[in-house]
Structure formats: structure tokens, C-alpha cells
Image 1 (tube, rainbow, N blue to C red):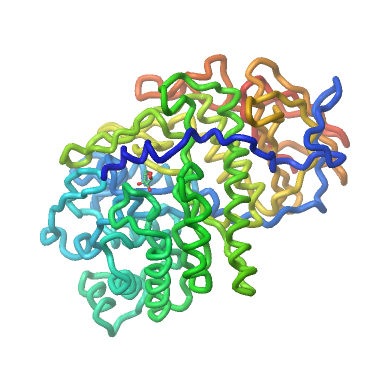
Image 2: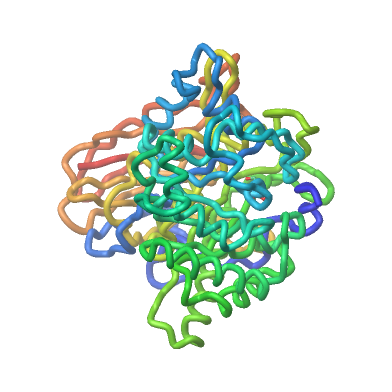
Length: 533
Ligand code: AHR
């Protein structure tokens, strides 16, 4: 079944009746609109949610469309180095500081034989990738990915084939990657010229195995048992691994939560984390009618609801098992994605697939997702913006270079400015009504504190009005502003392109005058970052 058929299994991502689990509200009210005055934000350094695991700002590279080929790897290009890596993209990803990158899929991984992608390049087979109906040359594989990760400074998050693949071959890949030498698979790696082990710590046990579109799709019980055996064999090779079981591929799945419960009932004690995925759309999926942007900008609160629901299932199984172990969550696919859904590569090499063009409103919501991931730092340890290059991505390439899509900016701000502990903020904000969801706060704020450095991330969902906000420092206020920028604009549908690469780009945000109370004004429809010290 092709990826497109997934459509029929997903409801519109707008869930009904979302309880808002975002910022804490003063006085325990469900929503506390500030009367007529400015919104208010109380910052208390003693109120911490958790220390931020920066792996929540990871990304994803799949053998899909032009993500690998023409994206990060293009031998023969004047922009490539001697290994065939695109130097411009490599340098950009290194500068961004992406902390962890998932690979090689995605749907692709469920039919992938990792042996096809290692060893002398002239001996690697050309195969048909059935997930995306694409010709796969295998010129880029595990060893190239590890080399590339080292060069960009990212940690690998390796996906395993639990569709057509066996636990035996999953364990063999661990041995290939992590064993020094002296065994069949580690010696194979050494014969391939890679002396030192790659030491891969984080592994995904399959991909979206709940989805009928997935190669090797199975029931939750079957998958849970396979994941258990797989984890067991992998840990025999390397007991230090961190393993992520495949959770529901979306809250719209008919088996949502039930899948997660049954899977964990089979393998809870053998895994460390559970995966979540979700893509968000600003249209009506059934009719194709244009979406409602005010509603769309509240979808990061649905991400939070999903996190809470899945965490609830994990804790239910934990309690039933009388287990002392608390699973963490890996939100290893998330993004806006609804315009370029066609997944048929027409049996071409590196076809243009899923090349979604992002606009300003998408970027604002991506900022909201970053806020939500920060606020759930106590539970989410890994998350991946899907994906990184050319395929539903912040970076788009052609043969002459690359440009940054709108979503690049909030994502990179989160990577670069969110540090240390995430603070539990109290926010007073006016609200607006979203049908079926209740009152949504206009202002969505996340903050981190690293020593004496505070970083604030503010989404203004009000598309018409700027909002004044008073920041109340519960302890000594900072002394200066280190950085302040805003992403905003008159046209929410504006996009970047090769012709106009900076149409949507950050603007300077006038640094506020700091006092015990610090007044700022955020523009209508904006995402702002301010770093204080
Ligand atoms: O990221 C694109 C695809 O979306 C992935 O291959 C799959 O896991 C998900 O359905």
C-alpha cells in the first residue's frame, strides 16, 4: 500500500475539546485573561520544569526524494567535497547545530537491507525502494551517514527495519556499528576501511508499524513481541543502547493509544522510550477547503495533549507492571505537512517528492511546537523536525546552492538559544475562541535559564493586533539584552524561494528597557526570541 493511502486513516489533526496544558495560569484558572491591561509573564528562576535535553531539537534524513541524493550527498556537483558530501549543506547544518539526526527512514527503513548500503560502492546493488517507488542506488549508506554526522556535529539516531527485517539483522547492524572487532559483523566494517566503531547509542525499533501503509505492518501484539526480541538480541551485543519502541503514528489513527498500550504490555521492560509522530495541516483534509489560521496556530497545544496522553499510557503500563522504570518520549517526526503529500517516486532516482514550500504562518506554528517541546522537557528527550533537507524541510537545495525556508528560523532559534533549565512560567494572556477547543491564549511563551542567561520564546497568535506584555522578574532582573529578533510580516502566506530567499526573514526586535517589570510589545502574528543576561 502506498503512503498516500494513509490519508483515509487520518482525521483532521484538529482534535476536539483540547485541554490546554501549555503555560501555567495564575490563580489556577483555566484561562486568566489579563483585564484590559497588558498580558503579564511572571519569571521565577526557582520554578523549573526540567533541564532541557537539547536532543528535542533534532531532525531527520530519510532516503526519500532529494533528501539524501542532491540534498546532503551529490558526487560530481561542484559544491561537493571529495566524498560527495554537499559542502554548502554540510556547513549550514553544522552552523545550525542540529543535535541529533534520525536516519535512514521513515517508511523507507521498513524495506531496507542495510547490507546493500555498505562496502565498496561499485558493488552495492541498485534496488527498488517500494515505500516511495523510487530507484535507490545505495551509494550513501550507514558508514557515509556516520561520517557525515561527525562532520556536522550531530549524534545519529538509527532506524531499524522491523518490517521485512529480522531481529537477527538488527542485532547484526548493532554489531557492525558498535563492536570494536573480532566478530563477523565488526570485521566486515573493518574490511570496509572503518577501523573504529561508530558507537551508536539511540535506536528506533522500526517505523510507524501501526500504519497499514507500512511495509510489514502488523498488529500491536505482534510488533510488541518482535520489538522485544529485537531489543533483547541488540542488548546482548551492546547493553548500553537506548531503544525506542514504535508508538502510534498519529492521534488520528483508529488504534491510537490502544496500539501503544498493547505494544508496551509486550516490551515495556526491554525499551527506554516510545515514539510519537504527528503532522499538522491548515486545510480541511476531506474537502481540501482552506484552513483557519487562528485555529491552525493553536495546534501546538494538540502536540502537548498528545504528549500527555501517550505519557499516560506509558505510566499505566508502568504501574501495571509494577516497574520502577519511567519511559521517556521520542517525538521523532513532527512538522507542518499537507500540500505535497504525493508519495510516488515514479521509479526515478532522487525524484522531487514532498517538497513542501513553507510560509510565514507555518513558521509561527513551528515556533509554537518548539515552545511545546520545551514545556515537556520533563518527558520528551528526543524530537525530530521531519525532515532536514528538501523533503518537508527547512533547507532546500538546487545545483547552485540552497535557501532557508521560513520554518528554518524558529527551529534554529530553539537550537541556539534554548539552554539549561526550562522554566515553569505563569502567563496571563487574553484569549480567543476556537470552535470545539475553547479559549486559546493569544500569547504562548516558553523560557529557559542557563546560569544568568534567560531566553524567551513568544508566539503571538493574534493575527490582527500587537500585544503588550509585562515581564515580571520574581528575582533580580537581568542587566542586558544579548539578542532579540522577531519573525513576522504582513502576508502570512509569504514564502521564501531561490528567487526571493529572504522574503520572510528575522527582523530586529527593539531591545526592551529592563526593570523589575520589563515592558515589551510583540507584533500581530509573530514569533519572537529575546535573550537576557
Ligand atoms: O516524513 C515522511 C514520512 O512520514 C515518513 O517516511 C513516515 O514515517 C511518515 O509517515
